[in-house]
Length: 254
Ligand code: NDP
Image (tube, rainbow, N blue to C red; front, side, top):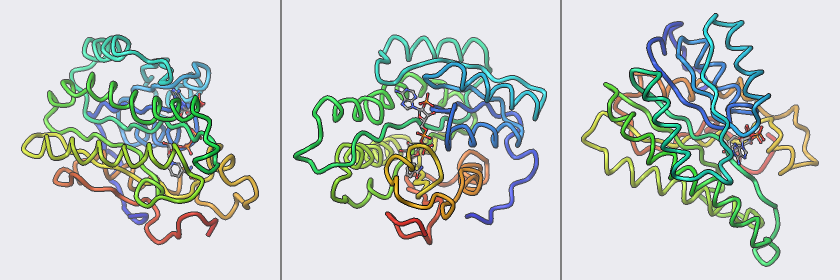
């Protein structure tokens, strides 16, 4: 999939929402989607980072994105519904959502996972993602074809010592994807996960402070699968957990 060759207008006429769009993989996905013609809705917790991404989108494409500041740690059902209502007012439909925002928590054995942080990781990675999905589903179901994408991890498919709340939250993410994919199997909506694999970002650096980050793929390197899942080329694919770097051994810098 790293060799996927998208057409230059792959995503024209599509409106796509990306969470955690201010940094790391989410930032790169938002820029890539804009480059391939999509209109963007940027969701994140740090306003100035979203504004910087918006400026880049404007200079790349001439179009501006919509920005919504939403902290997933404290997000309520009401806020998620307000976000959905605003999108409904400003766009004819919503063609795709990339749930990318994520919290790492602490790398430590289960006996040493602070319970407050455990709850925070579950809140951001699972509960808020569920609430936002519930609010946005009616908009996705209104589009001719729609793509709902969650972000998983290698430790969301095979547990690994010390990955605690993060690992458990990513198993839950895979579960949410599978349940939704089955519920909507006879609809216009496809539901999939992407596991980015080790990628050069702030989150990766805090999980692996000792490794040589230059050996890792960059967010830009892994964009082909992110483009594919949002494009009409993937219309028949649902219930799949895609690996952005299928040949990579999890937990290593190679
Ligand atoms: P980064 O830490 O670089 O970026 C995470 C993004 O999520 C940031 O934009 C951050 O916002 C946002 N975010 C964090 N907490 C919240 C919150 N409470 N509310 C709203 N937004 C929030 O991480 P990556 O780009 O590396 O990770 C992106 C996704 O990929 C995550 O789901 C991660 O679990 C997953 N992943 C990453 C891997 C990697 O090697 N990088 C490997 C496997 C999975 P802000 O910038 O404001 O802090």
